[in-house]
Length: 256
Image (cartoon, rainbow, N blue to C red):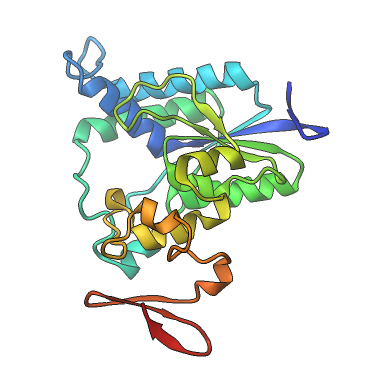
C-alpha cells in the first residue's frame, strides 16, 4: 500500500526513533501502580511490550513497504566532545531498562528480521536524518515515528519526509501519532522546518541541557522583529558574553 503524496504515489518507509519509543514505553508502564511489566520469572518486558505494540499498530495503520529502526549507542557522541555538559542533567536509566532493550533488539532482528542501525559517536537522530534523505532521493515517502520535536527539522513536503509525532510527553502510552507536515511544524513551533535549528540556538533546550540566550524564549524568538533573522544566512554567528548578545556578520560587530 502507498501513501498519496502530491500527484504521485510512493512506497512508504517507516523509520523508528528506537530510543525515543523505548524510553516512552518503559516509563509509561514502569511509572504505573504495578511498577513495570515482567514475565513470571521476573524478567522486565515494559520496553518490549510497549515498543512492539506501537510498532505493529503503526505498521497496520500506514502499511509501510519498509521499516528501519535506529538506536543510540553507549558511546559518547561528537556533541559530548564539543560540550561535556550535553545531556548531563539526565539520570542514567535503571539496569532493567537495558536488560529489556537487549531482549527487544533480539526480537526485532531475529524474529521480525528488521534492520537496526547504530553508529558510535552519533545519535539515533543523526542516523534518521541520513536515512530519511537518502531514502527520499530514491523515491520513498518517509514517515519518522518519534516523540522528539527536534526531528521536525527534517520535515519536507517536497521530499515527502514527515514525522509521525507521538505527543503527550515521554511518559505517555503511545496512541495514534499525528502526521506532521510543514504546516504542522509551524503550528507547533511557530517556525518552518528549516528554521528549527535557529530557534533551538536562540532558546536552548533544557531536555538536552543546552543553554539558550538569557531571556529569550520561544515567543520572543519567533515574534515579529525578533532576534530570529528572516534568512538563515544572516545568522552567521551568535556569541553570548556575560549578559550581552552580539550578532556578528562579515561587515561589522554590533551589540544588541
